[in-house]
Image (cartoon, rainbow, N blue to C red; front, side, top):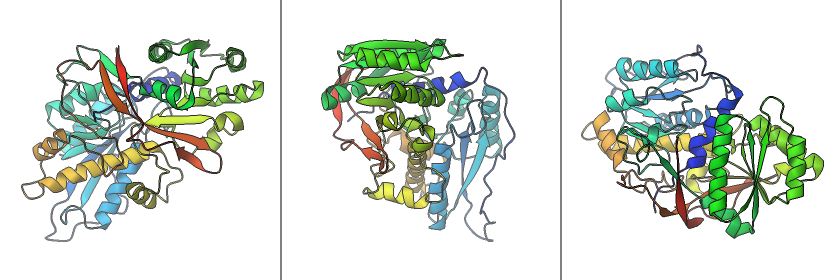
Length: 429
């Protein structure tokens, strides 16, 4: 089973940037994680040092990118409580890049050149300007979120979903990325959906992503209804009324979380009911009741798709361990689970290297050869085996969940069996 090319997730942060007009500058926050740490006793083995770069303070909001960081920290805290890696504790160094390219380069320099981290883990950066520098230094960056094209561009960078691009310094294949249509195929096969609406802003990034979604829907035989609203003064009620008039089965969007909540409220107000209001992994969180508090019908039509096991699926041992370790967090999210999986990925690599030495080169070699890695079933199988030519078709799988009041996100079928042979369409990052 090959890695999914995840166009939707790669574009998710593009939608978030609609909330701000510039990257901003780095904002002050402690670069290091000291909480609960005590000095190693004399004679103890030196700690294994890792870095986590997060756009924790950025123009799009303080909580937008912190999920992977929080999940990774929870994993390492539990790991250290259980003795670390062959008796060596993991020392986590945090750096907030402020959501800017300048801040990102500062974090890369700080962690790689000054702190000499063995690896970066669970990177979640709005502007990964330092990616080329990380690659040049041959520092493995493990389990990062593919917000931009960096993880499909440079060697030694290993995104949480894998990549089969050549990663020779050019994004994808000759500057083009490829994404499958499995999400649209799923709703067509499983729910008989035939008419899909795509809602966007009259803003370049939003409109471009909407066109990509529309291409995929048309490739799967959908009737597509295009809806665009003014970014400054959006009239969501008019959109909702047209969705009802057009008989849309599904609603996809290229708008931010706040806009989605207003759209859902308008849909409830005009009685526009759909099979699914489809969102992505970044919005797969436990805060849905608050985010959509004024739209109970639309809220219960929310569906999320991704490439990792539902964080609510506590019948699965690896998910249960994640939930036990993060019980004290005020909210839970799919990005937290993926950060946890990234930390486990590094740990598995470090343990494999323990006898010969936990070095950047050894950890990098382990992750590069991680064909079919799943983090104990938390991820769909990941690979980094490069393809010389872009994929035309492929069998892709997806994780699917639906929000239900009183139950939370309810898993819809086993993700390793929600699989379809689908075409892959080109797009420019």
